[in-house]
Image (cartoon, rainbow, N blue to C red; front, top):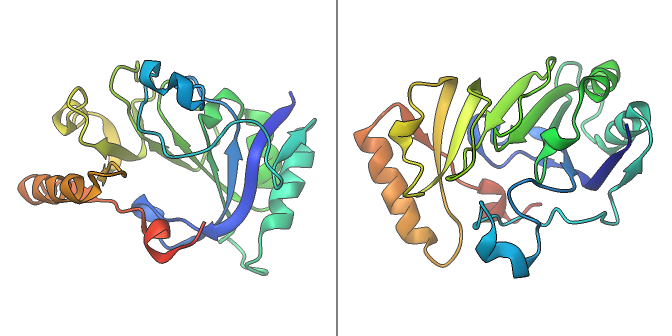
Length: 211
């Protein structure tokens, strides 16, 4: 299988339980809930995405084998010889349209822990070390377990109580970015204070000005 990747870069994870951790981000092109084109946003299942995942960027590429993509991820790591600390976050778009067991194995072979950030509409292949699911209102959720559920908030048709029965270790609310970010953040804070199972996730990479 060939893989189409928008960008690969080294940064700190900005969200969720791994916030602040050094990681290589591998952003796959394409999504099944939005084309990525503004003309289509009003018709998309997910209408609040803030990420460019269309096509191939200058630090992305098309990779013909799992090994070639794993090697590119390995080259992006700048954390030195930190045994057990190398983390790759597979994101998108929707990474599970492309991430498969062959690629997971190839990334493991170069010493990385494999995390995925998915909308949960595709079942995760075996071997992924950390699964973060971010449900979207109107989308059929099939990945019902994982390490963290990160609900972008508020979504009137996807309330936190709709997901509390699922098998996740961590539950996060992340305020929707945009013109109403302050209002959304206050609402998320209030919900977390009233419902302590939920924790607040902020996009700290945006706050500190890193990619």
